[in-house]
Length: 402
Figure 1 (cartoon, one colour):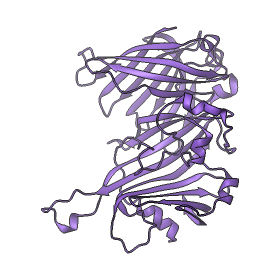
Figure 2 (figure 1 turned 120 degrees about the horizontal axis):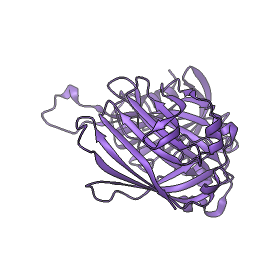
Figure 3 (figure 1 turned 60 degrees about the vertical axis):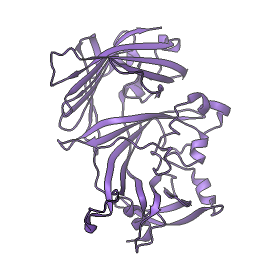
Figure 4 (figure 1 turned 30 degrees about the vertical axis):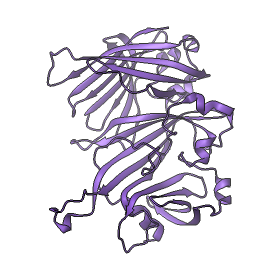
C-alpha cells in the first residue's frame, strides 16, 4: 500500500452512518466537491464576471458522486475502559453533485446528500445549490482544478506540493497533492494530474493523535474525508428537446407555494401547514438563480433564505418548457447505478390536475419524490416528498406567481 493511499484511508476508517452534508466553511471539514462558500450570495458570485476555467467534463448533465466520512475522538471519561478510547464514527454520507448549467463566469450545480436507511437504500437527506466562480476554483473549493495550473504549482508559504501514483476504485491515477498544514489543522487535496478532477480530500483538526504511521498530520481529534466514487452524464430528454424557458419565466419575480406535512402515525390529524416562497434574483437563457424561504406552522421564522439554481439539466426546476413536457415519452428515464434511484416521467391526474410528473424513487421504494408540471405553461405546480421509513409526506402546491 502506497503512502498516498494510507493518508486517505487513515481518515476513512470509520463506518458510515446517517448524516447531513458537512459545511465547507468549517476548517475541520473538506469542502463538498461542487459546493460554493455556503453563503448563498449570487450577487457576490457575479461581481467582476471573471471567466471560469471549467474542464470539458464539467458540463450540463454531469454527475459526480463522492463518499464523505467523519470520525472524532470519544469524550474523555475516567470511567471508560482503556480499550474503548480512540476514534468514534460521527457520520457518513454520499453526495451526488449535478452540473445544471455552465455559464461564462459561473458553474451552476445542485448537490443532494444521501444516507442509507434501515431498508439499506439510499434516501435523500438534504443538499445545496451553488453558483461557482473562478475564485472558488482558485481557492480549491470545487471538484476540479485547471490542469495547466496544477502542473505549475510549487511548494511555497506553508503549502506543500507533491506528485505521485494514486490508486482509487481499481484505477491508477497520477495525482497532484496539495497539503496545507497549520498548528490546529491539516488539509490535503488529491487531484488527477491529467484531468484536474478532485480524487480525494482529507482534513484533520484539533490535537494530534499518537500514530506510528506517517499520515501527513491528518491523524487528529477530528478527521473528515471526501473520496471520488463515480462520474457520468445523465441522458435527460428535455435537455435535447427544448431547454429554453417558457415566456412567463422571463418576467416572473416570485412563486408562492402552500402545503402540508402529514405524519403517517396521525393520518387524520390534518398535518402541519407549510409555506415556500421562491424569489428570482437572476436569470438567463435556460437558467435562473433564486432565493427560497420556507415557513412551518407553529414554529418561529426559519434561517436565512437558501440559494436555488436551475439550468437546462435540472431535475425538479421551478419551470420547464411545456412543449418538451408534452412531447416527452412516458416511462423510465434514468437509474443511477450506485444510488439505485430511478427517474421516470408520466402524465397523470394529481391533486393539482393533469400534470407531467417526474418521479424519483429509491431502490426499495422507501422514498418517492415527485415534481408535477403544467402541460400548458410548464410551471412546477406540485412537489411531493414521501418517506416511508420516516413516516411522513411533505407536499407543496403552487398558490400564486407575480
